[in-house]
Length: 291
Image (cartoon, rainbow, N blue to C red; front, top):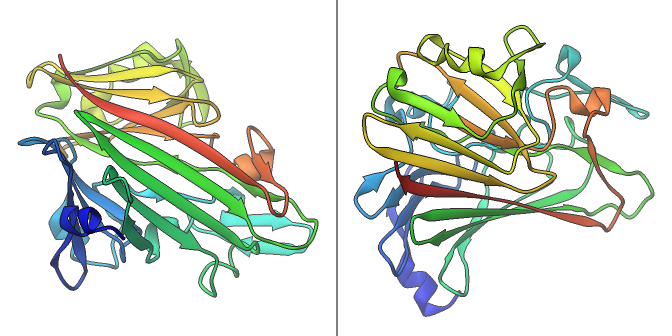
């Protein structure tokens, strides 16, 4: 790691380890590598973009509410919470295991951000019998966060590896009643019923709780009119489905890029495959706007 990387990426607390990365333009990230490689804070100058429930985070028995959890090798859940393969049935939890495991962390040589990486291990193979490497770069540009993931299949045999990938960022908002979202297709999947629904009608339920998937899309904007700010999600195929989720009374909205809908590794719908030795690059970008 170069000296500039050491200067920009610093350990700020132990147990669990928390690192802070500060860009040359003043934006910053906070990272918990041992708790799912979680980005817990994205600050654009003095503005915190992410919601983070630190009290819930302090209890490892509870799922995290906040930051940017990583969803791999599935998004959502599978029937009976199990992955069916020719070699057998493999139990796998909702959203996979990446958000629960320790990751490796280092600063990027060009000083633009950080890279987190996760490999197969004794903790992953009982749930997902493939040797893999998942690396994610989080790069800070002025008012923007660029996320680039590379998934590699490390096996030497001939079995293809199925996967889906997503990110689950929680954005801090001032008032659920002051939120609007533009850029989604007119029809969506209501995750609460798994039925097709009107996107506009679902978004009217934001203050009461909504969980929907729509796409493909190229640009989706979450506006907080009370705070006069907005977050734009720029999507690229195959990471071009968008999930919107709110959980009142929490003052947050999740705007999530997914490659595939729930159950993809069972249904085959938009399931991604990698042959041994192959890799795939996926990217999206979040941009803070003035509404």
